[in-house]
Image (cartoon, rainbow, N blue to C red):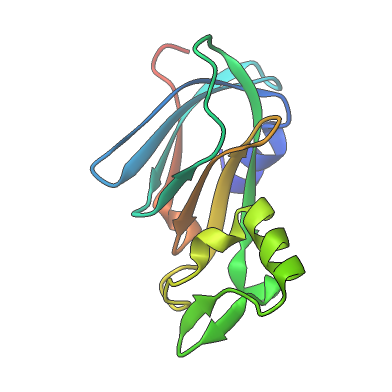
Amino acid sequence: MTLEELVAASGDAKLLSYHYAEGILFLLLLLDEPDTVVEVKIRTQLLQTGSELPATSPWCCHLGRIELEPIKLEVVNGHYMPPPSFVELMKDTRSGQGLAYGSKASAVGYLFSLVGSSRVLSCLISTPNHISINAAADN
C-alpha cells in the first residue's frame, strides 16, 4: 500500500494503538475499506500531540499529509518562520503547520497528521520515504 492509498483509505480509520520510540512513531490502524489492519512507521524527530486520546480503543480518525513547499510558509535564512500576520499565524497553528517553525526548510518537507474530532498527532518528515506501511501480523 502506498502513502497516497493509505491517506485515501483512512477516512474512517480506527486508531488501535500508537507509541513513539527511538525516533519512530508507530501507528496501528484498522482501515474500513478494505477491512485491513496496517502498521505505519514514521521516522521523525519532531512530534506534537494535540488532544488526549480517550482511554478506550479504537478511536476514529483519518490521516493527512501536507507538502510544506507549495503552501509557502515564510522562510528566513533557510528556516521556516511564523508569518507577521496574527490571522495567518493562527491558521498555521490550527492546521499543524506551525510545527515547522524554526526547522530548516531544506530538511523538512512534509507534515503528517492524525486527525479525529481535532488534530491528535502531527509530525514533520523530510520525505515520504520516511514512512513505511505494512499489513499487521495479526490481520
